[in-house]
Image (cartoon, rainbow, N blue to C red; front, side, top):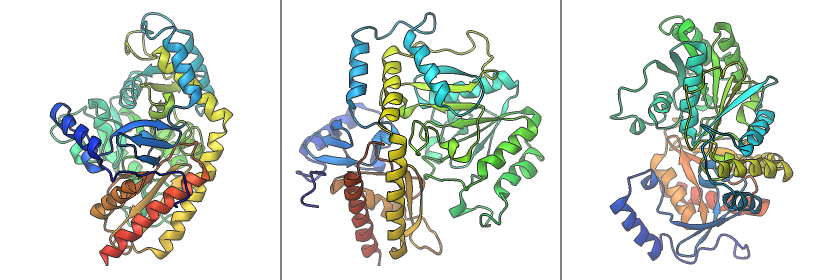
Length: 449
């Protein structure tokens, strides 16, 4: 560890400069999620390394919550953005045209799954993409209802929040929301709500939607879409089993219901494929993209079957959507992922990380489950492997200890460590990072005895 160039912790975090900024922040800014993690105050980033205001340098296992998939300040992104800023920052694609928008839309239509003609709408964020997707589904289907999943996170604007069911804190005091969204259990095999085991369960969670929801109280002929994340992000990095989405697709087709795929966190190579749903060989009707699409510059996209995006001009638009600077960044992101073979690296490094934590799981009494695809990996921490009681306090200690030792990592769900480094991460940084997290897990486990 001493001979490794990173991390470099020269001041125990939070340092004096960080503490000063945190104090000023609390006086003038809205409260966010930050108290749930730790007071990291970021100054700069390069590749997979983040530097704080006190000079500490950390290995980034968070990627700005899966935004910096090609790493921080990638030279190709910096060049593309700098060039575009010098030419045109904004004019409004709502009323006129940009060449970059067409170029990016054509690229997205090629990488988004589906052997059919597609159309694209651009907005500014993940929540905005979900809002647009909900509206386009309602318009095309002329149906008002949606089915979502318990544990899902789709954003915090009112339509997106209506589909979100991750934490009550996100929904409290905002009722009534958009009506007509009905939530059902997700394919969370480690904590199966039906108390059955895959594959002998024969997808009881999917049959439940058909037999107890669509046949009892949600008319299928009035249901526009089933909205889902292929891997639940905020909900705990939960990965449904093989065959799950193929079975869901059959159910949707049975009733002529659209599949609305939220790839805001799973997209742009995070799982080792361009989009998470590709692990199940299913082609959704509507797909939402944001976060990593433009390497930290605000951009969202909705890609649909061409016939689905049949709304009339003016039905939905946004002034700042398809900003030319963001589009230039997004084009560069796609090029970097392809040129540097980052999908392959995500799979390679991800398999190594999963194996390492599963080996640790064998000797640990508090690692309940390890799951992951590509560089979207969840390590669920429990107080007891038999009862599976979530270890909320303990997982917080683990991530804070990891931060103090030089690794930025956060949680998801009740008590899951979410590991999501940039797709550019090297084996050396991976090994150093997982060793630090593993050491923090062992330290917490010893104190629990």
